[in-house]
Amino acid sequence: MNFFSLSAIHARMNREKPMTVPSTRKDLMIVNMGPHHPSMHGVLRLIVTLDGEDVIDCEPILGYLHRGMEKIAENRTIIQYLPYVTRWDYLATMFTEAITVNAPEQLGNIQVPKRASYIRVIMLELSRIASHLLWLGPFMADIGAQTPFFYIFRERELIYDLFEAATGMRMMHNFFRIGGVAADLPHGWIDKCLDFCDYFLTGIAEYQKLITRNPIFLERVEGVGIIGGEEAINWGLSGPMLRASGIEWDLRKVDHYECYDEFDWEVQWQKEGDSLARYLVRISEMTESIKIIQQALEGIPGGPYENLEIRRFDRVKDTVWNEFDYRFISKKPSPTFELSKQELYARVEAPKGELGIFLIGDKGVFPWRYKIRPPGFINLQILPQLVKRMKLADIMTILEVQAINSFSRLESLKEVYGIIWVLIPIFTPVLGITIGVLVIVWLEREISAGIQQRIGPEYAGPLGILQALADGTKLLFKENLLPSRGDGRLFSIGPSIAVISILLSYLVIPFGYRLVLADLSIGVFLWIAISSIAPVGLLMSGYGSNNKYSFLGGLRAAAQSISYEIPLTLCVLSISLRVIR
Image 1 (spheres, one colour):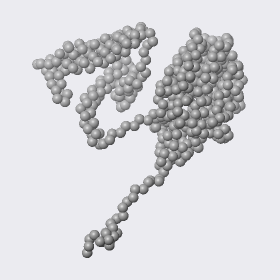
Image 2 (cartoon, rainbow, N blue to C red):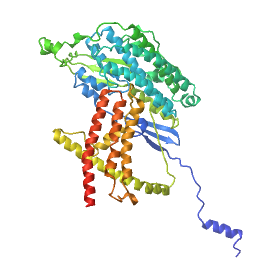
Image 3 (cartoon, helix red, strand yellow):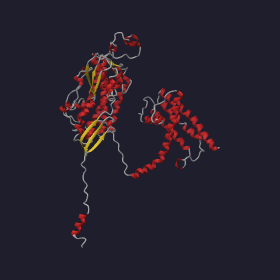
Image 4 (cartoon, helix red, strand yellow):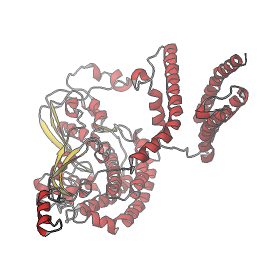
């Protein structure tokens, strides 16, 4: 038989298995975006169905940050509930306070003094700008532009400085009151706010020059997530999402609340309905807010900042709360007025849209029913409709929230094991020192708490042993604040000297192979002398701040550091003398 004959070849091919042909997978993929995804902030989860990179379906899952705010409101008076409401939306805290006091004001037909109304408008528009800025930065980071994300904090910090000067708090203000505001504007605040307005207009021009005509930005947002005017109305959208679809609807013009009718400003809107239109609406709204603030600052009237008459508690005529001591001398807050037996829906134009409250009174100091209408919750309904048939990368553009992704990859297991073996000798002593420090700090805190007869600090980890690590981590990630009147170089060099001196002290200790102590015949006093440079760094930082309280703090820290060196010296000497013997 000829082995290479045609029949033999066919027979052999028939006996062998057929060749496998690679096929493209056609199954759909279901991906979770959130709640642990950085862009979701732990409060939102998207179940996305993908065909490759095409979005087939999207299901938003809410409720990861439910705090029972409505039921808390039904068991508090309005004044008692005011500190809670700033947690609804920590980007636009003034609006949550405004709607909280506006609802009972309308329910009780309470008049607000003209000066208080002007102050409210100024604070609301500053809060609108701060909210839009913190929308703009993360939105640009979502689509790949990191620079604006850092720029927006420059102006936002100036707004928070104004808030802090007027209310005492940077974010959670507790400033609005039924019938007015908690305090009048401090001296010089109006001039500072006018200076900010002039400065911020140049900042908006800078944003428009950097972003608006950028071809990469236009490619990402133009024609993405289009919403028609009728569709926006049917979905119940509000705020910039509604006005970007060609609907000129702004509650400041429609409901005529506060004193917005006394100012010259225009409703900003676009007709395209895409992500670019929503961006343009928000940018234009910041400019209009500056116009409103400038007019309010220039025309703010005199008079009271709060209607004090509404503090009177009229449910019982001769109640103790109406006595002279409680109303004018004592600092005890009087109960709020009773809510009449009727229902009311109040609303304001918040940065994200219509923020409303449905309130039912029952002739008591507590609301019988308190229902919140958050704008973001309503606007999110249309998300599955918008992202269908779009690309996966367009979800963040449409959702317009922050997304920070960081991926790293090692190419082989061999490289991984090599890195591990290199790092083990380094991390082992570091881990040992860290555990020792944690135990020592824990013992010190427990002993101090026992001597002072107090409970002690907050506990982190089992028995609070990780509290020192938590404090150190918090300290490392705090802002690097430099005093405005201090010596910046001296203030910055001080901590470095304090840390470097501690590290240099270990250079006089002779270590052998694998960091084993080779010889105890070390210069004990030299080691202590080098480590004693640390208090000098602490004193430099306190002195460089040009502030007497900081300098006193530096003196206290230096004295504490020196007091630790005395028992440390005795311990080292005792060990050395024992070895010498």
